[in-house]
Every structure is written in C-alpha cells, then in structure tokens.
Image (cartoon, rainbow, N blue to C red):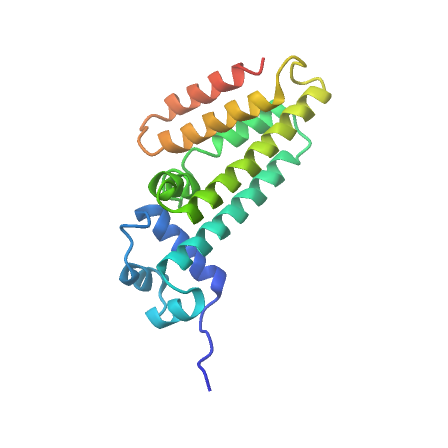
Length: 190
C-alpha cells in the first residue's frame, strides 16, 4: 500500500513559488526545494515531476493567483484612473513577498531559452493587457478618460510601464521615485 501525502499541494507550491521567486530557476537546487518546502525529494518527484515540472506548476499557480487579484481589482466600481493607480502600485514591494514579480523574473531568466516558460509568460502578459484594454474602454464609456485615447495603444503603454516598475522595484531604494513614476504614467491619461 502506498504512503499517503502528508502535505497540502497548494501550500508546498506556494513555498516553491517563494523560493523560485527569490532565487530564480537556475540558482535553486532540488536540495534547496526539499529544505524550503519541507517535503521529501521523492514526494516532490512523485507529486510534481522533475524540477522543471515543479517550476511550471509554480508559475501556473502564481499566474492564476495574480490574474484573480487583477480581475477583482478591475471589477470594482471605482474611478478607472484610481484602479489603474492601484494596478501600478501593485508593483511596489509587499510585505513578505520577494522583490519584483515571479512571472517577469521568469521571463527575463528563461524566456529566451525555454519555450514553455516563454509561452506562459506571454499568455500572462496578454491576459493583463486585455484587462487593461477593457479598463480603458470602461473609463471612456463612463466619461472618465478622454475619448481620443486609443485603448489598444494605451493598454500596451500601461503594460510596458507596469513591467518596467516590476523590474525597477528590484533595485530602486526610494519609494518616492517609484511614486513619482506612477504619477507621471497616470498623467498620460489626462
């Protein structure tokens, strides 16, 4: 009779996300994962497969969580410009989270050499851009944003700005600088 799992899959996946997010894929060894996740190496292989398969499952879970948070944000009945501000501010470090963004970090580290990672990252970016596009259109329909704004171009711009912030937060030490950048980005919507 086989052993029963003595862990909850999403809890250990969340630990894998944290470790991969902090160290990256290449710098994270299987022993690091065993130690950080608190489960046996054999359990990792039996449940998730090899290191790459675990990484992909961690990326998919992170993407799902982030997309849910973003959807909840854009569904709020608040002024669109305020929602975009909060979206951009989500780039700034949160207590208990590593710097930057796990998806962005993955794209930078592995996007060129790993087609599976590249696909997942691009898919995540497309979902975010579509939500931004819809948000711009909603703002225009409500009369909160100029009708002359091109939703597709602005959604590309905001996505690029957000990705830049998610990268910059890893080295920027002044909160004021990041806040100023967000303010400037929002001014383009006036």
